[in-house]
Image (tube, rainbow, N blue to C red; front, side, top):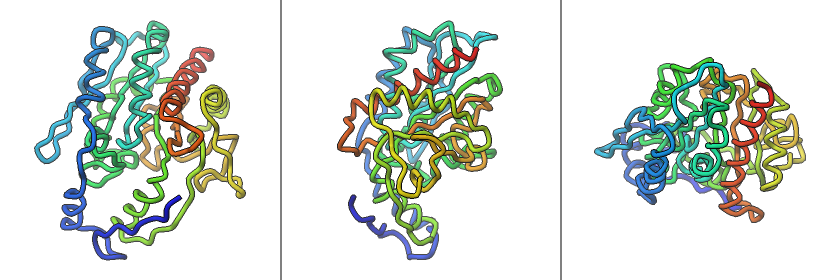
Length: 306
């Protein structure tokens, strides 16, 4: 792994102000198209599923429509399942895994669950291949009321009418080498704190909820994904990314306390997937397939419990 680079914005030890934020924004370059990669797929799917507009981001003259999909009206008595991708825009397989699930697998669950899919929560960041939004905020630390992030606030408004009716929420993420070489150093610089090096696990893992652990649900997903790609081992301390491994490939975070996306529905079964796309043992196709396998296993588990 490359050595972390010091972000040359601001003064070490001092949090960013308006000038530093403006300098950071000026460095962000559009590198791919949300309209082509995401909205184009959604348009193709509109003949099969209901497309639900749930807001629009407006950043410096750019507009990004936010869209979710579902299979018809919400049916009382069926379990609800929320699938979210692209909360961190740079985590590519989460976005394309959600879209792949819609294209190839969602029909199999129609009429059995009330599924709702938001494939790209952070389109500005998707285009710039970045973790943060336009305001240098992490949407996945902003799922709280009131939310400082437009992306998080919009998704919470979308989910609100069905809150308490979801059985499961699967939030699709990646852990990448750039977490260590770019994004964590940037976070330290933004907040005026020293950068503390960490490590990146080689393989897929899940984040369960500290306040509502569901080990059997997590295990069902791990078993399905292990048929597609390798599971991250714990390190010599018995940890994955600095947290104790509570089972092979599983750690726990306090979802609501940390403002994480997977805590927004009140669902019993929640998980955050973490694919490792930089592994020499995994291809981009395997990463997308791992996300799809996770979604399918999660819904299958919910149906078995119904």
